[in-house]
Amino acid sequence: MKQLVRYFSLGLLTAGIIMLGVVLISDNNKQSELSAEELIPILENEGYHVLSNNEYIAMSVNPNENKAKQDSDNETKKNPDNKDSKEKNESKDNEKEAKETDKEQAKKDEKEDKNKSYVLNVKSGMPTSSISTILEENGIIDNASEFTKYLEKHEYSLKVKAKKTEVTSDMSYYELAQALMNY
Image (tube, rainbow, N blue to C red):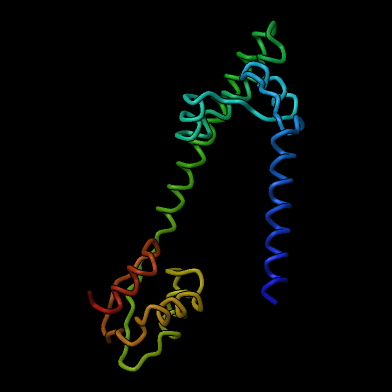
């Protein structure tokens, strides 16, 4: 058996040496080296975008703003003589930003209008599922079963105190649980 293992390991060693020799002698593994200037058009033709370090950092900091700029830059690269289209794109981008800002403000206003307040009267021995149902019926939470699961998962269901508590619809599950526990 020892002799069989020796012949096997000798065979592996020989095969490894042969493979190393083939790799070192072979010219097929040499990669052609291209400069960055040669690679950029190839990548752009394949549909990739090439960014400098500064452009990448700027894009990662504010992706929405830079996307509009990049789109207009790409349009300019395609049609360098068409400056009017670039100006139109910039004005459209400004209009889009203004509309998005208006929409965000409208959402905030809606949230403030929809913010509801309710005084919850928790009675002794009241199950958390009943508390969750009452909160859902009064528009404080969206999903009673989800809130009940949250209370049970984080072991708040055993710590709920019998008392009157004022709660609002803008409170998180954590804040609601803390209010129910009297913290």
